[in-house]
Image 1 (cartoon, helix red, strand yellow):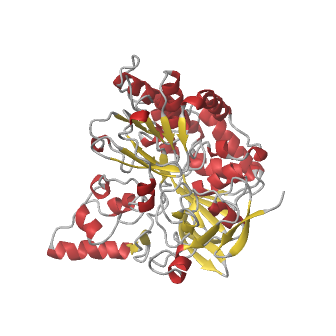
Image 2 (tube, helix red, strand yellow):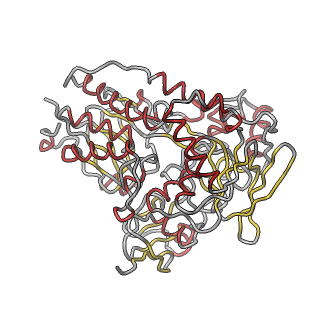
Image 3 (spheres, each protein chain N blue to C red):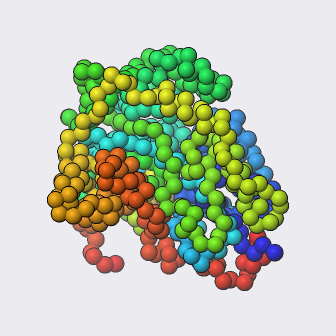
Length: 91
Length: 435
C-alpha cells in the first residue's frame, strides 16, 4: 500500500487510514498548527471539537477543527496564520 | 401519523442506546455527531480502522452489535454538527450531511467535557487535555512522539495512563493533586466493576514502573530547548520534569452548553447521559434508553415512563470517587500569577480579570454582562467552555456560572456556507412519510 499524504502548508505529511488531520500532524512531530488571532499557538487541546484551538483551513471544507476532520489524499491543509498572510481578503 | 423524525445529538453510549430504543419501537431517528465515527469519547475505539483490531470492552461490543442490528432504520450523519434550533421547531445541522428539518422530538446526548484548571503555560503547543491523547490512542493506536506526562486529578487519568502502558508508551509520571491510593477502605466501598477496573489500571501502572506522584500540583509549564518543562510542587518541595507532551485533566463536567430545554419552543426535548449528569458510560446507556422511552411517551407511540432521577447507585459511586480524589489537604491552594491566561480564545489573563473587577467596582457594578461584553471572557469561539468555570470561581461575589454562560445558538461556530448549503426539508412534502 502506497503512503497517502496531505499537504500541510505545502509540505507532504503521511497519514494512515482513520487519521484526523491533528493525529497525522502530531505523528509527524508537528504540534503547533500556526498561530491563532491572539498570537497564542493553534494546537490540539480538547480533542473533541469544543475548544476551537486546532482550527485550520482545509481545501474543499473551509475552516474546521483538525481534531475532527479525517485526512483525505492530496488534500491541502493550511494554518490559519499562514492563510491570512498569503490569501487576499476576498475570494 | 408521525411525520417528522426524532433527532438525537451525539453518538456516544447514551445517543446510540437512544437510537436503538427508538428504532426498536419502529421510529427512524436522525443521529448526528460532529466526529467522523460513532462511540463518542468513551468508545472512540468503535471508530478505529478494522486493521487496528481494537480491543473492545464487552459493553462496547454489545452496543455496536445492537446498533448494527438497527442501523438500516437510523439516519446516521457523521462529521455533521447540530448547530441550532429555532422557535418554529427547525433544527439546523451543518457539515458533511447538513440539513434543516423539523424533528418532533430531540434527545441531546452530548456527553461530558474535561475541566482543565488554568496554569501558566497551559496554552503552549504540546499541552492538551488528557482526553485528547486518549482519543488519538483509541482511534489511531498511536500517540504523539516523545515523552508523555499526565497531570491533574480524577479516575480518567489512570485509565489513560494504563492505556498508554498497554500501547508501549508509558507516561513519564502521573501527577495527582489528590491522594486516591491512601484510602483503601473507602475504595472498597466502590461497586465491584468500578473497583476491578481501577485495580487493573493501578496494577498495570505499578508493573510498568510509572510513578504516581500523588498530593502533587503541576503548577506551571514552560518551554526550554524545545522541550516542555513541567514544574511540580508538593508540600514545599519543587521539581521539574522535562517532557514533550502534557495531558491535563481536572475532572469532568456536563457538556450542556446551549442545550437547555427552554430554548426549543414546543418541541419535546430531553437530555441523556453525561450531558444530563456526569455518571459515566454505564449510566449513560441506561439514560439513553430512558430518554428514548420518554420520547415515545411524548409522541404517544408506545407507553413510556415519566422523567426519573438517575439510578442512586451511580450517584453514590461518583460521590465516593470525588471523596477519594479530594485535593490533598497539605497542598497549598494554587497561586496563579497575574499573567496566567484564563480565556484562551481571547487571550485574557487573570490580571485582566482582576483589573476589570477593580475598575468596575470604582465606577459601576460588574455583572456577567460586563465581563463578557467589555472584557471578552467567554466570548471567543469556544463560547466559554474552557474559561467560564474558572471566571465564575474567581468572581464568586460578582457573578455565577449560569449568568456568565447564558444560552444561545449556534451551539458552536458555524460556517456561513454550511448554512447556505444545508438542504431545507422543513416544508418538503416528499419527507412527510418519514417517521
